[in-house]
Image (tube, rainbow, N blue to C red; front, side, top):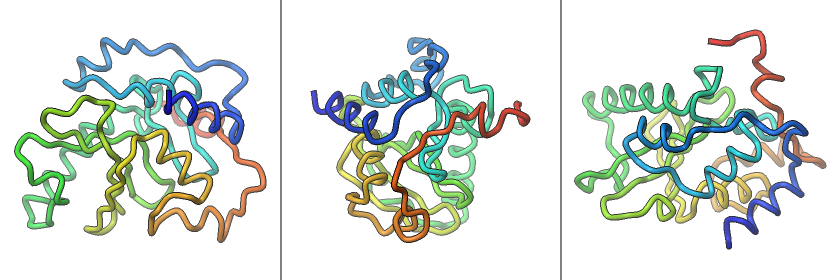
Length: 191
């Protein structure tokens, strides 16, 4: 129920595209990742599809026509990148020190190298996964005890308890929130 309320609030705040996004084969998407995905994320993808919120946050979706927005491609790339960083001695965030814990990306921040991940811990159901933000060009991680939809809504409204995304209000100062599809933004740069 909370996710539906958050989705309704997000839709009122930031209208989705007029044309519905392509349907996602969730069984195949879950199988490809080796984990079921959270219900709030599925609702977000089914409502918006791949694209960017307020010129800042890109939503990753399974089987996007654009590798930069493709959940599977970005999961593989982020797994490799993070493994290399940790092999070189960068510290893992505390949540990943637990055996069997992993991160899965669900969004990234435009132009910064920063990613938003789910922290998937052993014994948790996907709807219990919380959000980890990694600044991307540095070792800092920020943990949020919320799901992706609630975090996205909080980031867009300036209510997230985060050291990041302040520029949404300091620089962009949105009077209207916007979502622009990947096709509208990246149309010429398909895979």
